[in-house]
Image (cartoon, rainbow, N blue to C red; front, side, top):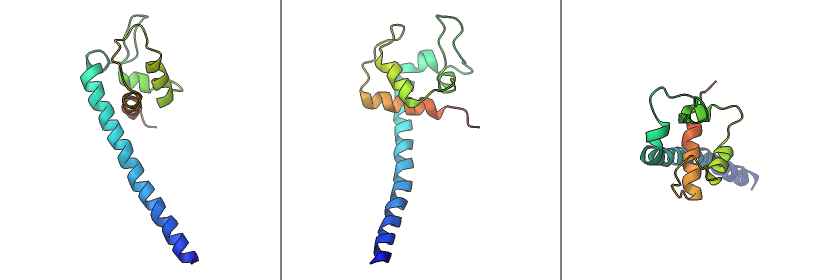
Length: 109
């Protein structure tokens, strides 16, 4: 009985380990598609860094690398409907996917 329970737990952990990263990759892919369709004209230029001055536009890599940046922070920013950005009427799922893509761009230590 104990072996059966341990085997079932092991299988559940294995499935979670394999499925969770696949779901995350899928979400990053959806976010990239959204970014390319809606945001590329302003935020995805080669070599674009942090915004320069109050009217500057940051690249997504710079946004991802801001100190303390999180997916939740990006979603909160998008939900605030910033006046300097177009209102793309993103759904909550689209905001989460876009934030997953942006944070995927974060520099790895």
